[in-house]
Each structure stands twice: as structure tokens, then as C-alpha cells.
Image (cartoon, rainbow over all chains, first blue to last red; front, top):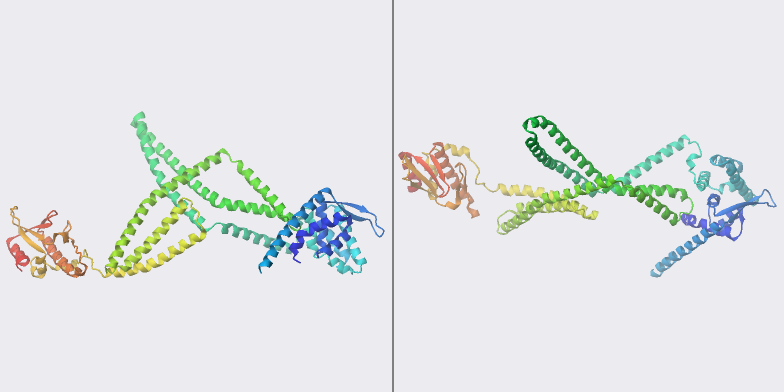
Length: 107
Length: 470
């Protein structure tokens, strides 16, 4: 898939995943990579940025195996942003789809 | 690369961050790799999944809104890369900057400068007038003695004022040109530069349209804000530009008006030429050349008009006009050669053939026998000294003698007889030259178109014999 497409929706996907349930880094990367094929390296910086922008907050939780894990939780600000992005994406994809279908009908 | 190497290198690259931050990030990445390894991937594979280390560290730092240039001391190779990049960037902006200034704008600017030189020259007159009038007044008030001292100083002051005004005018013209043609490009460039900087910060992630819009608005707002702080002086200077531009326009109009009339007259003449060509006078080359000249002049006039009043034309229109100008220039060059060839076929009536003329003396009347069909002799009894003879050309309206009797012009409406007329003209010229040589010509009577000569009886007999009885 086009790398530019991926970049555009990656933030939204990450937000939706975190919104579903609090999640720690590795699991989140795995989940996201199942949805969009992206380089794992790009997700951590994105998480970092969104945390710094106060869309996410982090907390540590003990795990049964190994050291405590860093969990990500969406903030109310992040939720707002997610809803906005979601709406934008839906509108955008809808209009693009309509346009493409129209093009197909013409052919 | 194994896990420890990877983490160490990452730590180095992130060294600009605080220790806590680094540790937090490193533990996260290390945890990730461990997870992967526990799922059965090799250490190498797990590390490689992160992709390029440089890119990773860069995007992490960008998340902190940091530029990765700060992170490491630049290595020599990086320095070269960076400097070449800067060079390229500079070249690119340079290119963009100049590609935005179109040919027409440069042309406009040049015309403006040339015109301002003209204005500077014209500006001299009011100053000269002012100087002399003021000196005159001062002389009336303070008397001549004072003026003789004051004259030099006053001239210097007025001249200084003139030069100051000229310099101001030139500066304002140049400034106006810059403002008008470069300000816009400059502004847009600034905008895009600022945008680039801001966008860079969020580029690696989702570049949402909204953010760009926001930044754009912000930048535009800032531009407006700085624009709003125009001082009183700037406004004054602007007013000055405005006045100068309008006076320039009026000046151009005043200059163009006679040119326009000339163009109309040219068109009329061209119509006459067409008529001549249609009535089988071979002047096709001349007609062609003059037609080209008219098109050329019209184009130039149009361009100057458009520039003067800032009529915005699309660039293709300009390019077309320039092509037309070029074509007319080339064709006009050919046409000129053609017309020269055509015109060389004609024998011009006022050509001088001094060498031949000098051979003739008054006694050689036998050689000018043709004259008798064109002129007659008349004795004027009103004058007493000697015998006064008048030579009267028979075809008054077709023979014209200039005041110094040197040139004879014979006009003839019938084109085909040019050669015959030339023969007569030559003969008459010889006769008059001979008369002049002997200082026999007294005067030329403009009204009745006759030449008054004084001859002795012997010469008169000879003249009469040749002119009348031959």
C-alpha cells in the first residue's frame, strides 16, 4: 500500500486502538501492524509525539513476566481529536469513493 | 546488529534528550525487541524490523519538536552532504525567485527606468525657470549688488534641489518597481518558507490539511499585522510614487499622441501605395516594407499602452506580440532590400551631373536644341542696360527652378515619359549652368516662372537662334 496513505491514517488507527482499551507499547504495535503494514519503528515516535501533545497519557503496570509495562490511555483531548479525525477520514474516503465509483461507471 | 548495539547507537543519537527520557525510550524499545524474540524471531530480525536507525531517531526527535542537527557533532561526510544540500537549496530558491519574475515585468521595469531618465531631464526646466524668476524677484527687492554676490549660491542651491529631486525620483521609481513586481513574489516566498519550517515539524507524521491552513492563516495574519504598522512617512512615500506614476503615464500619453497620429498617417500613405501598386506602378517592395513598419509600430504602441496603464495581458499574448515583432523585423529587412532595388530603377530628377554640365558653354547652344520645345525667349524692354532676355519654360506647372537656379525639377504625371523628361531636364540644366557661369542670370521671377538674364547682342542672337528658330 502507498506509504503516503499509511502515514495519513496511522495516527487515527493508533488512537482508535488505544481508545478501545488501555494498551502497552508492544501489543499496540502488533495490533496496528495487523491493520496497516507499517514499519514498527515509526509507531513509537508517533506514540511519543501524541503523548507529548497530551492526546495520550501513560502509566506503569506490573506484569507477570519481566519489568513493569508502560500503558497508554487516551485523554479527553485525544478523544476529541480522534472523533474529529474519524469524521474527517469518513467524509474524505466517502467523497473519494463516490468519485472513483462514478469514474468506473463512466468506463 | 544485535540488540545492545542497536540500543547503544540509539542512545547516542538521542543524547540531546534528558537522561530520564532516554531511559524510558530505551526500555520501551528493548522490551519490544525482547517480546519479538520471545515470539521466536532472531535478535537481528527484531532489530531490523525497526528499519533505519537514523530515520527512527530523527522521527523520535521530531516528536519532541527537535531538529536532529543538534544531536550529534557533524562528521566530515555529513558536513559535505549538508553543505551541498544548502547549496542546492539556495540555487533552487534563486531559481524560483527569478522564474517568478516574468519577462514582461522586467520589460516594464526597464521602460519605467528609461522614462524616469526622461522625467529627470524634463525636470530641469522648471528648476531653471524657478531659478531665473526667483533671481529676477530678488534683484527687484535687494538690488543688483546683492544679486551679484548671491547668484552663485542661489544657483548652487537650486541645482542641489534639482539633483535631490532627481535622485528621489529615481529611487522611488526603482522602489516602486521592486515593490510592485517583487514584493508579491517575495511575500509568497516568505510564506512558503515559513510554511516549510512549520510543516517540517509535523511532516513525518500525519500532515493534516488543517494544520497547514492554521499555519498559513497565522503567517498571513502576521504579514498583515506588520503591513498595518505603516508609518506616516511610508504613506507619504507611497503618495509620491502614485503621483510620479501618474505623471509618467501622462507623459507617455503626450509622447505617444504624435506617434499615434503618425501611425494613422502611415496607414493612409500605405493605402496610397496600395493604390499605386494596383495601378501598375511597381512599388510592391515599398508597400511591403511600409506595411511591416506599420505592424511593427502598432505592436510597439500597443505594448507601451498596455504597460503604461497596467493592462494585464496573459503571458502568451506578450509572447505572440514578440513573435510578430520579430517576424516583421526580419521581413522588413528583406522588404528594405527589395524596395532599395526597386527605387534604384528610378532616375531621380534632382540628381546632379556636374561633370557633364561643366563641359558646356553658352556658345555650345547647338547641343541643347531640345530646349526649344520647352522654353521661349522674351525681350524685356523695361530694363535699359544691355539686352534683357527672359527664358520662360512653356510648361509652367511642370518645370520648377530653385532659387539658386541650380536644381531643376520637372514633374510629370505620366510615368512612362520619365526618360524623356530627364533628357529635357539635363539640357535645361546645361543651359542654366552655362548662363550662371557667365554671370548672366539676373533673377528668377517666381510669380511668372521666368528667368531673367542679361546677354550682349551677339549672345542673344545665338540664344534666339537656338531656342526659337532651330
